[in-house]
Amino acid sequence: MLQTRTLAALAFVVVAGAAAWWQLSRPDEHIETAPPRGPLPEFSAADIDAIDIRSPEEGKTVSLAKDGDGWKVTAPVEDRADAAAVDRAIEQLAGARIADRPSATSKESWDKLQVGDGDVLTVTLSSSGTPIATLHIGKTGRFVRIGDAPEVYALRGVSRAMLERGVAQWRDRTVLKFDRDKVATVTAVDATGKAVARRSAPSAAAGGDAGPPPSSDSETWTLEEGAPIVGTFDPAVPKTIVSRLYHLIATDFADGVSKAAAGLDHPALTLTVTLDDGTAHTLLVGGKADDTHVYIGRPDSDRVWTLLSSSADSFAKGPVQWRDRTIAKLPAADVAAMDVRHGDFRIVARRSGDGWTVAQPKGVQIDKGKLDSLAGAMASLVGAKIATDVPPRAFARPVAVARFTDEQGNTIKISLAAKREGDNLWPVKASTRRDVVLLADYQARRFLVERDTYVASK
Image (cartoon, rainbow, N blue to C red; front, side, top):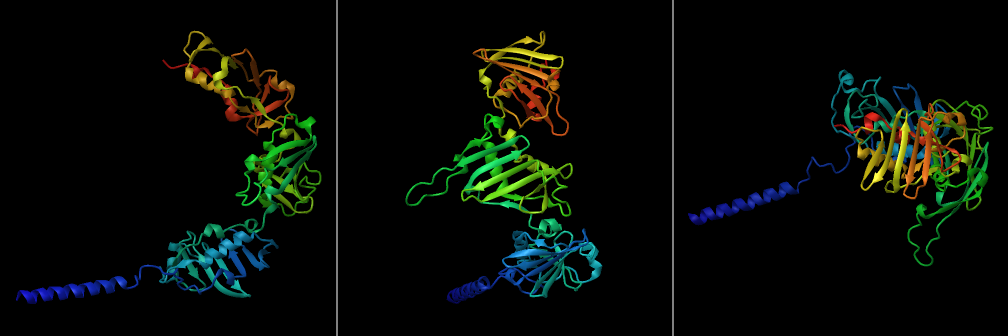
């Protein structure tokens, strides 16, 4: 009897093991072995040579067509397209993951799922003049309708935001493009004159495997022309110009605006980057397009673009702005005495051991931490810009005056004029230089000492 039970148990184990093995070896129907296509026909990105995108917001269709190895915009304007953007869009659409079964089957569900005609972004993909598929992508990007069918399917793997661009974002907005490692010189010309800087790149290791290319951090720049205007040269300026211009993308196109109207026939600034082989890439900076944009162009094209003023300010620097903008480099530990006045409040303090002896204001306790911070304001005081239009009378009644004295008795005096409207910069006149420098707001405010801030609470 025992033997029979033992054999039955062994048989059960064998059968159960075989069943488990069979179950585990079956393909899991819940694991996607390939992206589900649902009702979308099979195609690859290489099959597509035309794409039409209609936005419900703009109410117009952007049409794109293959053009050799690139793409072009054919409507509502004709122009070269941003090929990388088009390729990314088509790759996403070709890899779209659409549920096999619909989430809804009637038009009554469209409003709830936000796939009605007023909500959808309609994308039509074509090959050799024949439409392959039309996708109506819902407002959230999570649902899609295919063609004229009423069914709604869940959608994954497609970013509606990437597809829903204005026509300007589909056009190629490249203004300049060159190899930054082959730059030889940078030239700036404006009403003040001309400046030329030459780049000396570090040489690659000789023989065998040279390894990675030298870092741009080790390159050097020297001023070849413009010393009377520039004075003490800041090599970071031409380096920044190269880093901003080597692949310059405009913000938008100024279609219908002539170069003369944009101020590009007599530009405010001309920047030219010349490569080792003599090839020149020139940018013209014109007048203001509006409160936040400037016009830019090239001498070899009638096209006019716009660029954010904040972007242009980072590199559009004439010869005067190639000047070093250092006001002071006095480490906080080297400050032996301070005399700072703002309005009717004045602080006079002298370093005493690890602390400060305060001569003014009298009769109150000053926050020593604030004094340490004030001394640190001179550690690396560098202006944002060289001022070219600040009259001497601006300093007749300065907003603040500060004197910092080191252990050897050398004193640096700076005077702060009223902040300029519109650019949030403060004119500074310093005993360390002859010109006027514009200081960023966050730096200038360190010299605007206030009684409420410096008097220690009891």
